[in-house]
Image (cartoon, rainbow, N blue to C red):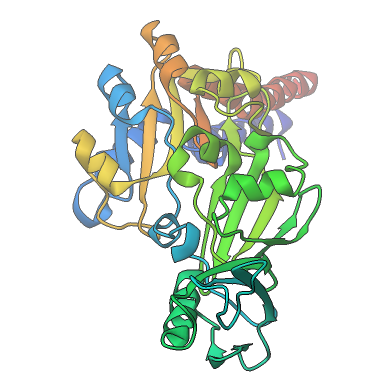
Amino acid sequence: MNRKTGWPELLGASALMVCTALMAGCALLPENGPSEGTIQRAGKKTGADRQFAMVQLDTTAVRELGARRIPLYNEQFSQTMSGKEGLLLGVGDQLAIGIWEASSDGLFSTVERKQNTIHAVIDQNGEIYIPYVGQIKVVGKSLEEVRATIEQGLQGKAVEPQVQVALQVNISNNVIVVGDIVKPGRYPVSVGGLRLLELVALAGGAKPPVYETEATIVRGDTRDTIRLDDILRKSENNVWLKPGDAVQIMHQPRSFTAFGAVTSQNRHTFKSEGISLAEALAEAGGLREALADAGGVFLFRFESPALLEQAGFEQPDVLVEGAAATVYRLDFDDPQAFFLAHSFAMQDKDMIFVSTAPAAEYFKFIQIFVNPLLNIGRTGIVISREFE
């Protein structure tokens, strides 16, 4: 082979390889996620191709969708009655039954006193025994129903009887609290009723901070979970408990995840009851200098379809477990974005993604593909000169 003609041919082939590699290089670049343009185009799709709702964060969107939301417990829990209507007697309960008569020579009265008290324990058959009345079925009845039954049974036997029934020892009407609580155990539901926060107080309080704690009520086949701080902020959530309820107190901090061109790509927990989008970005270390696209800050969230409709935003055709996949976009090239981010509340399990700036992608391409190939070319030139 002629060295003077062979090496230029080789260099020409190398140049062709360089061009081919450059053309394919863009597709081979490592990425942190979709570009700002890719997300925007996907958000503009219609019909069955529309996989998520796209919301530009402006003053209207922040006003309609940016406030912190406090959920409510299941209706079944909020409709529970307290007091005598909600307390039914069970096996093992101990009753104190007071009987008064108008005359001192009655069945239960004496010269010294016109009142007598009978102590009764509900047996395994759900009954108690009252003299001159007999066996009475009391399981599943309220104190008022038992009082009326005894008084009716004494009519015509006792002298104008008056009856009072009190729950002396509460065995059957209990709730259970377990989990991250100081004193887990079984607690009685009094005649006056028992609210959720009262139970937490009786059990010594939750071990974790209130804003990091969830309270789950299990009643039969129904269960629902709400955070303790949401119970304190909305009195409707401080529901009346029903005998047989089980309450689980669990340490479960709110969290969000941050991806893309941020300093700390990680799962972050809330450091207080509520944080704003601005605070969340600061928690993630902020946007990475020379890498982040300030116009490509996105918040991914499963949103309430009813809330989106009420605010006038289009919904995706397909819902995920009844929730609408929603992407919020914020443009930090606009100074107003800082005020909007300050006013927009984060929700549990939100995801923040910051896309990479196009210029950063260009420099990444230069560093990964172009510079190494140029170095190869320079080496080839040096070698060819050695053979001349």
